[in-house]
Image 1 (cartoon, rainbow, N blue to C red):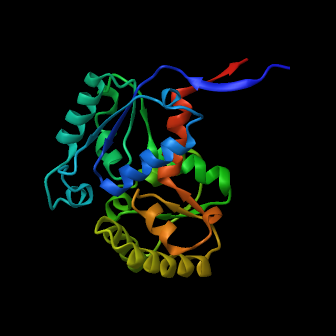
Image 2: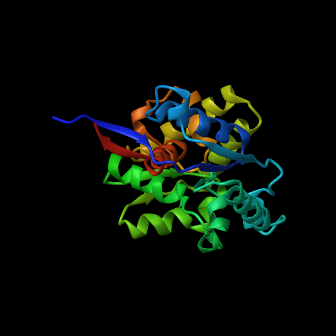
Length: 240
């Protein structure tokens, strides 16, 4: 009986980070852990741009700041020029803008929103809570993808959305104890209303959830979903 091994398919990964820095670092950490590699050379080649000066995505969505679209496009095209064959962007809200020029990218993009919804559906076919930035919630980007897959998302109320945004702000400010405490309070409030897994649809929120001490099996991390799909794009099965 032949043994199956996962090997690199030779594709190089381009990562656009900095939105925020802790989320991008966590993406790279999980990528290193989840890749089927035992030595350095079995890991993928990664090109990264960590552009922390990209204008705030949510602020732009609400018309109160500069659009990040030109910078997102410039950086993703630069990653392609550097040699990337696959792109990943560990920021959910950025995908609202990326979707406006995605067809112009010369290489495939692993879409964090699509992958997170599919991961949530696999875990909990009956639906999940969606925690996100207020910008992501307002665009309806997750709601549209969920509708496409006939998956039910439960959206927190305005006050709960404010708490979700504050958890994100705490993580960005490296105030992890505060982020964890507030995330725990918020999620337990949601579970009291409807006992379904929580989909952390902002890449700061998995870090807040990790700091909360809540059970991992009841959350769907957008970072984790992006990493899993990225690994699939970079490796292939080989019979030995």
